[in-house]
Image (cartoon, rainbow, N blue to C red; front, side, top):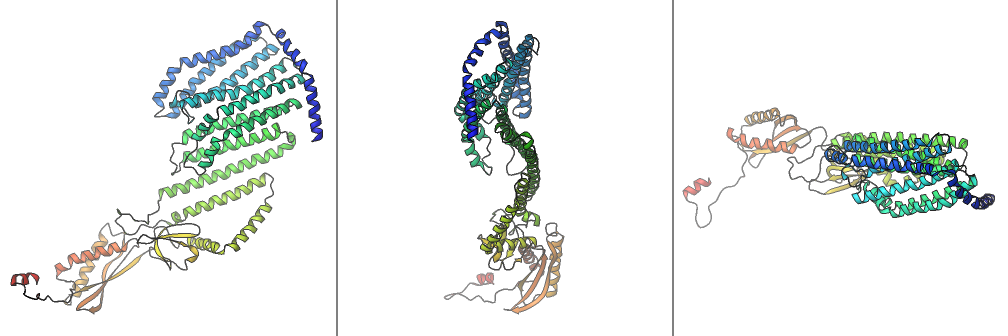
Length: 626
């Protein structure tokens, strides 16, 4: 460190000794160019900007008409048509500026090289302005991509242009001095003097337009996303990172001037360009996908997420090369090559793992959305007393989704760390020891989880089925990795850990045989009753509404008891376990309607009617009562 500081100090002494020479160089510049040549260089910029403004003004009405016609029905078409019209203005700028630059003469000469530099710088600036303009569209909200209002869009367009122009002026100054034959020491002195001014301008730009950019970033945050509060916090405090970035960029530029190495400046410029392009890309993706429903996944949402991650990984890889190799210069290109290859492989592995996860998650979410769980709660409009049971796959799908996600996250993280050169053996060993410690320290939790896994693997219950779990019973409303939620028929919700379910009785699986008794009069013709009930059962089996529910028809089993001067006769039927009580009620109703017509009477209570004290009923009333 001491030797490096001494070297930098000596270098600074040499540079500042050259300050008078810099003044002499600037004083000699007017002798190198005539008034015509200077006017021609300025004319490149003036002619290009004038042509761009005239073309944009000429197509302004056409652009507004396009947005009015297509923005509501096809925003993408309006965006593309508006961009083509703006591209015409950029093309006019290029043609006009190129025509003026062609008057400079041979491209190998100093004057021709400067004209070419001016032309490239102008196209660079207006090219970024073209992109910013089609994203922001001041005073044209129909075609705007950025989620901001008109006033914010106009201010942001100015701020984004300042962000491009200030570094561009610094780079053009360096190229101008190199082309005009300035010595390296003079170039270093000029950079040291100008960089603080440019850095101060960038810092002021970040601070002055911090609220407008915060509105842009916050507008892209989905309030229903998982980390929405954290994203909003970053969006409103982005300026802190922006200030730090441009302070470091200015420091790197000064160090580059002292060491006569332009790699740091180029590295910072690459990072800045990649961040701007990432912002524009994220805004475009948000504009295309923000109208998509959040609860139901779509193919467009999955593809947009994968493309978004791919662009982010490219930005990370480019930024790593630009910062570590260019800006900081931590190692030589030959030494950096294997590390760069490892970073690229790790990025590819991350992308592949993410694509697999998004595809699996899409398929699982679509299956969940297409197969909603039955409701075990109170539904006043429902005709059935019991909900339909979910399929086995639908029941375990939420747990399966979490398991697949955690597995891919762990395996993908270990794979990426291994490719980056991190020794993952201690991580695996530490995770094993930690898992063993957790297992001993929370045996009841492990027992609940393991019991739940076995219950799910054995398909012991499904959502919507009615079960008896020894201590509680109810309809399965849902479950987690350690407990099950049972809704009692009276409305109570029981949450029972799997470890407390010693055995499970499932009342909703396969089939259910219902037996019930009815009392008839002593003089009932049992054979006629048997035939009549058999006919009622066969009629129900043939009805479309019940033929899928009834597995065996209603029939009489026989006389089971004689009690209270009545015959106790048993009936039974076999049906699917969804709601056999409804079939039983329907069967009793049809028996009540049809049996009396055939002279088959139900048993009556053995009581007699006595006349009230103090008088009796008249003969007509007595006859009516009898």
